[in-house]
Length: 331
Image (cartoon, rainbow, N blue to C red; front, side, top):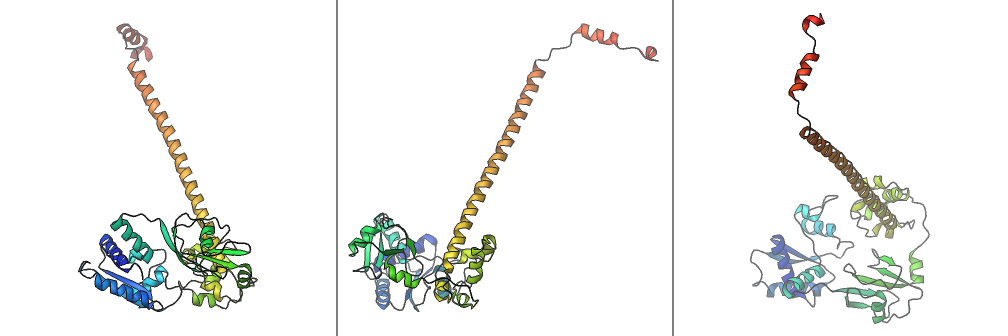
């Protein structure tokens, strides 16, 4: 937003035109006042270029985690709540991030494909943390080397932020479109953050901090006991995996890990059911085709038999009459 504000504003106007929206809100947390001023200035400079009916404005939001999540941001900005299992478009809202908006500008105005991402490289093991524009497909090992981290012995890597990031098993994994951050942490730091899991004491702290208003301890029990369908009925897939519940849990229960485990197995079960249903449909279609082909062949044979059936002659008719007894003879 500081360096590409005008391009982002044009990208917003392109999105408004594409979806037929009349209003756009640029939500910026109040700990980034310089970015807010840059966007406001870009809007003022581009006011004459933009369509008059489009209402685009900047709104400062309180710095709160996980306010950047789509559903929470929409509710904070518009007061509209996205129903469970639905998408923002079902309530007439579209949420796009700044990186995507800039990529839309590059694609439409410059004809340039998305080939790189700006990612944040940080962590207590990184000598020179900072932001870096990286081409898609670049190995994480090379990115870390550019920030002064050459040896990865005893280093733990997280793909994403400290709350929602996933641990990487290899540094040779490439940068992808969804990469927004890379954390390199010393092993001692990771061990101090992960303590022994203890039984749930039903304190309810996880439910208080859940931004989706779920019951994390109950969902975790269901996933742990492999009651996946029950967990799904309790809106497991509405969980955004923000990590707030795990962070406040006094029993050190890795709740988000259970949710990811449950979601993964539910997705696998769904794929297996889809495959089984497709196989059943193929089998039924094959049986129906075989029966149809048999009936068609039988019909063709009947037509051929009728066509080649020998015609009755006069002698045959006379012999038939003689062979029939008269009424008197029958009596």
